[in-house]
Length: 224
Length: 353
Image 1 (spheres, helix red, strand yellow):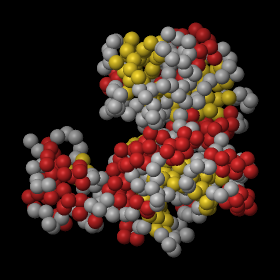
Image 2: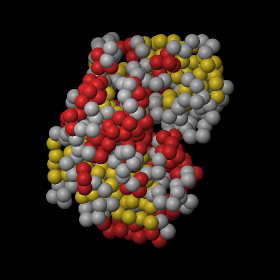
Image 3: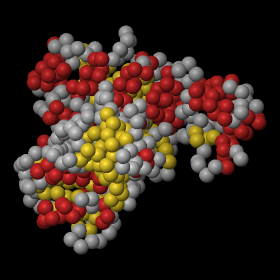
Image 4: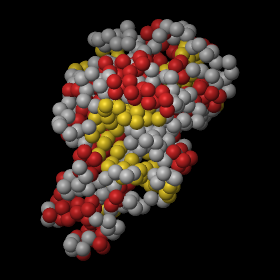
C-alpha cells in the first residue's frame, strides 16, 4: 500500500531514522525504532512534517522486530518519496499510528505480490506466519526481488520468483499472471492474498476466479 | 526568456481557478482584470481559440498563447444508446482516453465525468478497475468533458461517477468542482454537482469542509468482511469510519448525501443487510440509491431480479430510509454504472510484474 493521505484526525508523532538504504535501483528500506504494537499487514502514514498530508505505506518488518521497516520506491515527481530518499540517519520523520485490516493468519495460504507489494507479506513472514504459505513474487527485473536471500532460505521451493524482463537461475521467466495461469489444482479451500497495483490485483483475481477459487477466498490489498 | 522557451510542455488554461489565473496574470505582468476576462472566455463561452477573446488585446492574446495552451479538446468518438444516452471518448494524451456519459431524461440532463484514466481501487464488480490505472486527470481535463461536449448548453447536473476515484485525485477534483460552481466559472448550483467516492476518508473530510456539492458514497455492503471482498479499500478506510466522518460534518440544509448500493442477487440484498444498513445509517441524513448490477465478464457476482430489488427497497423504506432505484441507462453502449473502460485502447505500460 502506498500513496494517498493519512487517516483523519490522527495525530502524527516524530521518529528518528536509524537507516535508509537503497536496496535496489530507486528502492529504499527505511528503518526506525519500534515503540508501538501493530499487526502484520497494517499500514502507517508517513510525512516529512506534521503539517503535511501523510502517505500510506505497508510495514515491512515483523510484529516483534526492534525496528519498523518501510519499503518504498521513488516516484519521480512524487510529493514524498524523493524527500524520503534524502533522509539520513538521525533525521526526523513523522508517522501516524498503524492501521488497516489486511491482516495475515496462521492458516495455509498463497501470498501473491508484485514489486514493493511484497512488504506486508514480509512483515507476516517476520511475524511467524510464513511456515505454511506459498509466496509468489512478480517483478520486472531480477534486482527487485527484495528480501530474496531470507525468503529463499526460509521458504525454499514455496518461494516463487517471476521475472518478466530478465532471465535468472531458479526464476520463472514471465509475469506472475502467466505463472498463475499455468498452475493446476490450486486448493479451493485456501485463502489467496494479493498485494500490488490495481492491474496486477485485478488480473490475478480474475485468473484465480477462473480457476474456481471463490471470491470470498481472495483477499486483495491495492497500492493507491 | 519567455516561459514558452522552457522544455516543459505548455500548461493549459482550462482548469485554472480565478486565483490561478490572477497568479498567471501577475507572472506575465498583465493587469489583474485580465484574469477575469480569461475566466469569462474559458468558462462562459464556447470559444475555441485565443483569437476569439475579443476584449483582450492582440498583444496579450499572443503572450498568453506563447505560454499556455487553452486545453480545449474535442471528443474523438461518440456512441449513442437506444435510450438517448451518449458515451463520448476524449483523448487526454497519446494512447490515453477517458469516457464521459451524457444521460438525458425528461427532468434533467446529467453528465457523468471521469476523474482518472483507469482506476487504482480494484473493486471486484467494476470494469474500469480492470484496466488498471494510467493517469490522473487535471482539473482542465475533467472540465473539458463539459466544455467540449456538444450538448454542453443542455447540461443541468454533473456527477463525478465516470472512470476513476475522484478522491484519489482530490486536488484536481476540488479545483474542478470550484470552477463548476463559481460565479466566475460554469455557475452550476452546488446542488447539481455530485462527487462520488468509495470513501477515501481524509480527502472526503476536506471535501465536506471546503465544498458544498453533494456527496455520494459507494457502500455496496454494510458488513466489514463482505465489503472487503467487493472493495479492497475497506482494509484501510472501513465503511463505519466513512459514515462516522459524514456524521461529524456540517452538511447544511440542502446538501445531499447518497449511499450508492449495487445490488447483487441473494448476496447483499437480504434482511440481514436491511437491518445492518438501518443500524449503520441510523444517525446519517442520507438516502440510499440502489443500482442494478450490470454483469461484467468473469465477475462472479449475480444481478438481482426485479422482485428482490423492489422488496429490498420496500424493506429499507420501512426502516425509515429514503431509498430510490437508479434507472440503468446506456446499457447497450456499456455506458451504465461500472461499465466504463478504455482498456481496449490503451497500451500496457509500466507494469511492475
